[in-house]
Each structure stands twice: as C-alpha cells, then as structure tokens.
Length: 418
Image (cartoon, rainbow, N blue to C red; front, side, top):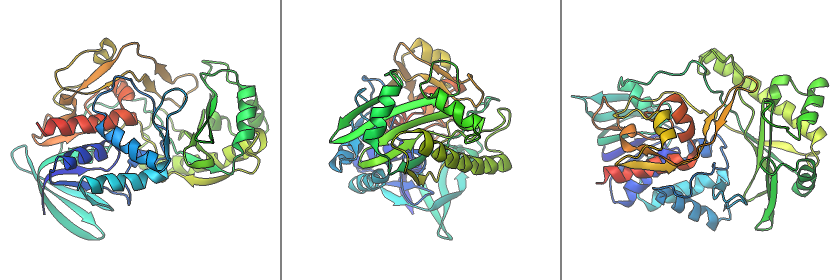
C-alpha cells in the first residue's frame, strides 16, 4: 500500500492534519489504535474544550467540526464565549463523517509495529491490525500519537522530562441529575462567578463549578468536602481536584474533570505497576465521589455513573527534539515567527497532586508557536502534532489544549501543502 501522507494517531491533532490534507485531494491514511477517532475528546471524555484567544489562527478544522456538531445540537457556545462545549459521543460520529467527506482512509484497531528508515528518511511503516500485518509506503509521516510512538521507534532525540510529573486524570460522566435543582442550589451557595456559572441554552440547563484542596481561594464547597472527609465518606486525596460541566444533548448528565490519579510526585506516572494501581485507585475514588454527591449535592440524590473514560487524560509525556525548541521565555515574550501554526493566550497550566502546588499563570499577551517545533530534527520527513511537540515543560502546559491541537494539525497540513 502507498500513501502520500500517513498520520499516526487519530486524536485531536491527527484528525485535523488528516482532514485538511484530504480536503486538498491528497492521498492520506489515518491510523488509529482505538475503534473510533477523537482521542482525548472522546475516549478520555475531555469536554468541554478550553477557551483560547479570539485571534486564533488555522481554525478551519475546528470550524468544520463544530458546524457539523451543531447539526445534531451537540455543540453550544457557553455564556463566557467558549464555543467548545461539545458532546463526546456524537463527536465520534461527526469525526467519521468529516474523514469520509475529505476522502481520508482510516484504519482502526491498528498498532504501529515498525518504522523503516534509510538516510534520515522514513520510507515505510509496518502496522498490525486484527492479527494481520500491513506494510505501508509513504512520503511523509505525521506522529500525532501524543506519546510520540513514531519518534520512539525512529530513535529520535527527546527533550528532558521534568522530574515532577503532572498527574493523569480519569474522567467520568454521571446521569439522572436534576439540573434545575442543582443549578438553583449551587448558584445560591457559590456567588463567585469565576467558579460557578449557570445558564439555559436551547432549552437545556448548562453549568459549571469547581473545588480543589488548594488554598488559593475560598471554595464554596469546602465545608462539604471537609465534612465528607471527617466522616470517612471521602479520603483526603479524593478531593484534590473536583470540576464539573454539563454536556450538550445530554440533558440530565454532568461530566467531571476528575479524579486526578494520585502518585508520588517523584515517580513517573507511566511506571507500569504504579500506573495500573493508580487506575484502580481512581475508579475507587469515582465511587466515593458518587456517594459524596448523592449525599451532599442537591439534585444528585439519584444520580449514577454512566461512563468512565476508557483512556486516561495525559497532560505531558514524550516531547520530541524538533528543529526549534519552543521555550517558556518565547511564550511569555510573545515572540513572533515567520510560520506560526497557532496563536493563543491560554494560561500556563501545570497540575500537581501536592496541595497548593498547581500553577495557573495567566498570560497577558498572545503567543505564537512556530511550525519548526513540529518538525523532527533527526528524521527529514517526520512531523509531529499534539502534546508531543518540541516545547519545554512549562510552554507545553499552555499549548496542549484541544483548540491549540486543532490549530497545530491544521497549520502543519497547510505548511506541508505549500
């Protein structure tokens, strides 16, 4: 089999680059290890998208995705102006529709087995799918796997990982929530509209609220979490991070950006035994959180768990050494580049499992990411998109959100089409 472009990883960035290349009538193969596209958006239940700059660029894939989602009433614009509130289940269908429209060939349940390199050039890859091996020749390879699997098999150089690893998150969805009762109760309890908001859109109640064990603000839910810990309903670590959002086209459901998978901050979250044990503990935490909500949150009395993500939310792992290493100094200075793939103002966002150690630093200027941070310095026809880009630890923490990954994929595709 021969393709002009092979995109490995059908998550946020991978879908974007494949779609734009396909719309340009290029011969594109998109390889995905799961049975659907979307990656963190769908498998990891990362919804909604975080809000980014109004002056963002390379928005073609984002616009087409949201336009298709709105046809199903599965995407809304929230009251803060965030256009990225979406339904992760319907997103699986819409992403398939977009790939079909762009004539992108997709292979599901496919795992990368080998990369064949000659003179700094990937000439073919081997994948396994349904116990069969497939040999694929290509001109360009885009690694959008998040963990940079192509880069690892190609023996590329990587940037040094920070010793204080960011925690993973195992998200979940709860249904049978009386959102009217909860909305009235939580907005009365919490007057801080930077934390708790609620509105009605398309005759559906939509809302958001949060709590952490950090001491950076007076959380309205603090006394409830304190009481639950004192009564052994929750473990102290269960309350390290708690954030919820409603979901379009799911009128009685709430999606949770928690729990963090608690680990020793000095041990890699990907150490096999630690990773597996923390997954078990995260599911136990979800059950305790459900009990907490049934008891303490008005409207949650009869709520139940309807979905636990089948992929963990990973904030940072392998970052390739590219032609340009984007730094936190570049970001904070708003450095300009000849070929930017994105413009954003999303904060520096570093999570920690230690109390009051997470960092959310707002950026008062817009910053750019150059396409050279998406180009391998070791392999001449290997490109990356997504969280595995060539950026230092702190810069990457601001660049990993879904809209930025969409822009990366779109911007990279347009660069390759020049």
